[in-house]
Length: 238
Ligand SMILES: [Fe+2]
Image (cartoon, rainbow, N blue to C red; front, side):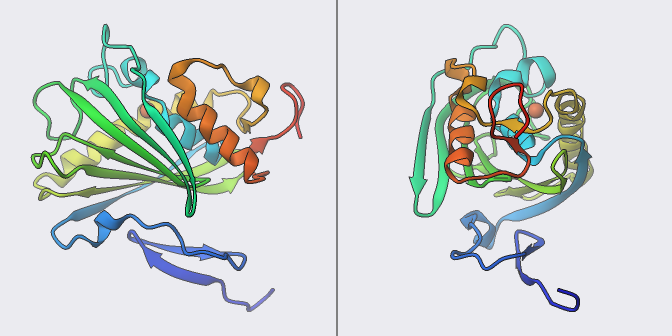
């Protein structure tokens, strides 16, 4: 209504608004409350694809050697090893653990290749949080969050925020690193057909590497999401 103010909160360096009256709080990322952590809001990248497509791509380790060659992956290390997917109801989220992938340059300040461990959280239909090893603190993970801000059903502003347990010594190098990664993803994403994420189970390819994607699609379907997705049979818009 004209003049009506949206409910807003500040979290993770952003102001979040809601059009409705949510029954629960926005998800938390507890690392943002650790006083010795530093976080960087990487900025927004406009990608002509639906927000769920951007989240699904963020979860996909299989594309690392082919899209982020020499950085997040390289041949012959192309195998996605088995990992674990758990779906929780309170709060509603998907947790993907025991992911391991060889990465030639896992982070902006990496100087050698390493087997990198990943944990992914999907706490929101348009947001995902990645926890990865590779920082100088072996027991504390770097946190990289993707917040998808839909522009419309076929276009999203992808916001990346990085939260580190180490001091950020070269901010320009870090920004360049993440801009390079997203710049490599953007044309791949924009060529995806359809731009909206199909949720029909017959659209899924049941291979092991896609277990995270399959769980995410099922989760969106069970939650009744209609925005940025296709809910009908393959080949038919819904
Ligand atoms: Fe990527």
